[in-house]
Image: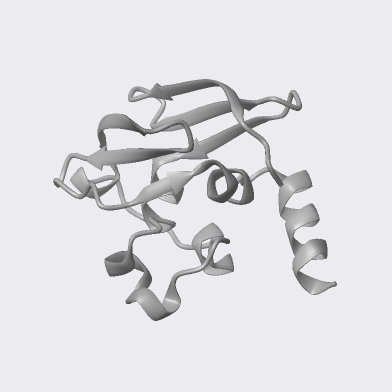
Length: 119
């Protein structure tokens, strides 16, 4: 996957992040999913657990509404990623485009990613 976003929007009132991709697909990420899937070494449990795809468990992990799941800011990292700053101060995760597309929670993307990983 080498998709790039054509539009990015964060809605604090809806508590969701929306990315429109260059292939026309739209991904809608609840803030809780983004925080559960934070790709930083600390959230992943160390550098040995770092990988380019999100862990499958992030899609079922429930995170309560708190400063940890409340968006403070979004910062571009060059032209390849975003850093999300959470209200609890956490800002170590760099969400690159590949990772964000693999994190898309829609049914079609979940099926496609499962097929790719199994075979």
